[in-house]
Image (cartoon, rainbow, N blue to C red; front, side, top):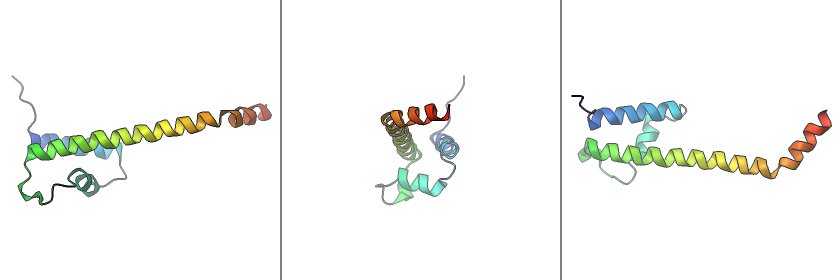
Length: 90
């Protein structure tokens, strides 16, 4: 019977995932953003930290998707200029 990873190990896995997705962000930035509002970190349990990091990861992933969608919409609104430029090149 396989045991699921402890909350501690899941926190580490989430931090690794975040590092792969956002290599320019350091661990301190991720932890600071995830734990914002918790105040004193001394008594935060592993489960609480896992919850906070998962919530932060969901938030930051949706922000990236929103930025990508904004870029697509802006490019779509400029489609006439893009098509005119490609026709002139031919």
